[in-house]
Length: 213
Image (tube, rainbow, N blue to C red; front, side, top):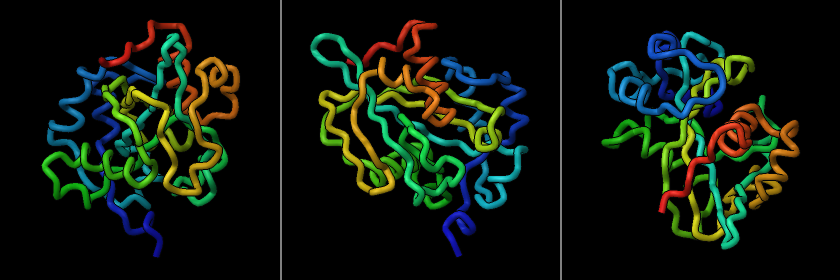
């Protein structure tokens, strides 16, 4: 039996998102949602195999973007192509700038299951060979795609001192830091969450989120 069939993942009712303030795409207003999403008594762990097909619930997903700013102010992001061995089949072969995954019931034994789950996912997928500073940059909700209808993304920006992030697994292919301008010029190759983040955070429509010093 596959991990997807047996895993129980962290979810909130979709109705909660509508009550707190529905949005499509990206919002930087993390404070409006965070407390109720994670500390309002609305979370539960449910079978992932069921949740992947049930839009009445949103699976909470940390989505970490690694950003490197060089001495001249040039910004590059870690990006990669999703291999066919990764869990979400609907995203295979898509380019991505986000690292992360589901928060499992196994993480619930820790005092902060969300933080523990995010660190576990990072440790499973990449080597981070550089100091970094982390900040929560916003939330993603994309009800225009099959995958997005059952997930809610929490976007974290990790500002790295050096572009030294490497994949731990072969399914994170064609990986490396690429200038933001090149990524914005190639949006059609990216999964929807990455497109949303690239346009919202780096597309010039709003001021970019500054590095955390």
